[in-house]
Image (cartoon, rainbow over the protein chains, first blue to last red):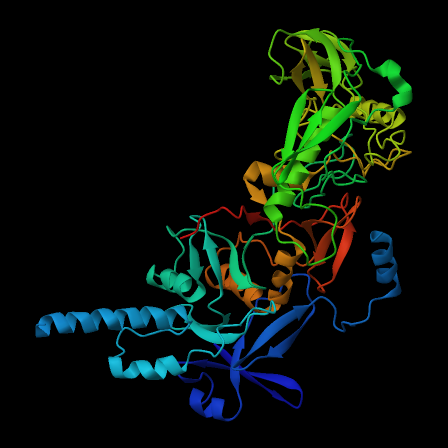
Length: 87
Length: 483
């Protein structure tokens, strides 16, 4: 399993098993105390390019995206498509 | 009262208390003693459990075993889990523990067929995105085969949801020479009627003397998020498709003594009664007799009941064009042409040409085509109507309304993705379809040309042209019983 924490806006993942980190000596409890949370990883879908991590109460959830920079804005071509689809 | 009886009474009361606490969503470990129950009662949320009422299910992580020496984290909510092939709803953790207990193997275990959740105040089951083992092409067999995307039928047709005081004319009244019962290629009648039937509606076709019943009249055009009567919409769509095929059935000219409503097969063969070769004319045959009618699609003339009946979408020129292309490609509407095995015109569950007995004559119904661009031939539009409807009807499923569908989007990046990843990656069930990420049709009508859909890449709810081919996430009928 992986736990993670945003350090300087980058997600830092640490692999843990048997209650401690695989490549170190810190225990899970120590890492949790340092602000790390469980990370729920999802295998990368083939059509995706980048991932982000959404934060919830006790964990981060990995989310994959098709484009590196997803805009919240609807593009002109998309807007035209939507308009022509509707009546 | 004896001590034993008193102990028995206390044990019964404790068991009832345990059930009541668990019904409020708090797990009671079997080892909990009576004096530990007050702490569990404190965990019961005030005002009831409202998680998911806004569509979102809260997220917590659970660490699960992936092998004897490794673990991983998954998102978890007790209101979302896995449906198996026996229609058993599994808690995700219980489902996975079964896999662990089976030696980290899915061999011999029941297979998952979808995801269940409680959201928006609804109990929803999302089966895996619909797939079909039959690819299909347009009616000419000339465009790329299509698989696993489906349109919804009766393009440009209003929902018939009310009774009529008088007969409605469907065939152009100014073409009365087309009405000639018993004559090949003609129609018996140009009218239909609608009569209330309880909460439903009977649609009575005077051409074939058949009655098609929709279970509820509450299936008209509507704004988004107003409906969750998916079963009723689904049956309405299906019955209207069948009704429209009947409205334009043509007389074969072949007599029968069978009672009205009796169905029989229609073969499509050459003039000699053999399978037509490429570029050879194809005819409708019934019971070993050639009707002399070319195997063309029946025209449709009612894009808008009560509207302009002279503006049918499948015109004679388009029907002729389709027939010419079918001849050239060796395919036909019954998938019995020499090339039909590689160019399926019929999708799974679709009906080809068939005949029905009407007052002593066989009348031929063909698949209904309503998205033919009205005035000209458009190859990628000419798909026999309503693949989504017929394939779901064939499989005993329904399309959800967009209100039912939207929680899929709201929980897509959390629980839906986590469960699909668990099944595919951890448990090795690689045949599980990927999470839906495209436009997905709902069954809810917006207007005569559009249904509501949900775009699972970004979450748009928008009405979308029903002749477009989209992903379908079907649901079991609401009457389905679960364990």
